[in-house]
Length: 273
Image 1 (cartoon, rainbow, N blue to C red):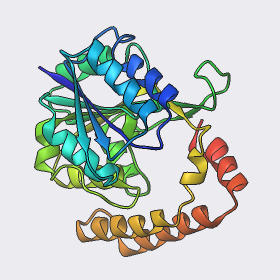
Image 2: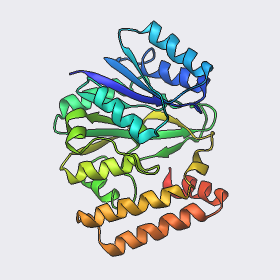
Image 3: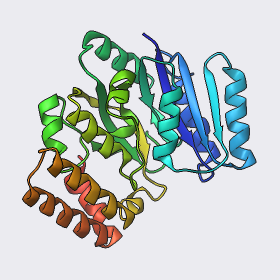
């Protein structure tokens, strides 16, 4: 089996955070990936270019940079990147997060022992400044396929930055598609509809940075339009009833339009542990 890591970098990414993220998916890993493909989504500052070029030059046998002339958004960047990946499985990674040193070793061991699984995720631990902080927020998802399918009826059942995806299954479901800040949730629904099998490891193998406006981004009005598409898709494919879709839209509208401090409170007390 061959394993790829897929990342996307754009102009607003932080060079220092990117440097740490890159180190975490190669130098720090006990099981190193066979390929790291990085989509450069439009023009980027010199500081970001320097970090990417230095990393690529140090690991030229593994790293591939795929520059794009225009910024087209995450969904399009991941579509292009996934198509270009040569691995049998694709690990997702963001430009400002940190993978645990055992992440790839544990996820590879699981998918090789369970070849019927098409998407394997993990829990994530959220931090403000450092993953060594006490009382990290943990987003846990169901471990088994049935629990994941049930959670998908209300909210995303996978932590996107943690997943390992079988490339053939990704292609069967149509690959990544752009959808108003919910590209990952849309992908999980399409893969579920295509009969793909899911699982999660209930341990935090990715540390996600939330001290950079993470909660505020969850309050974007654009997300409401994306959620409407998701509800229509689930109703059309018999995943939920129209009443469930109405309840979902009501909850996302209330969540997005509430004050930021209330969203933070809900994240800490209801949506995280």
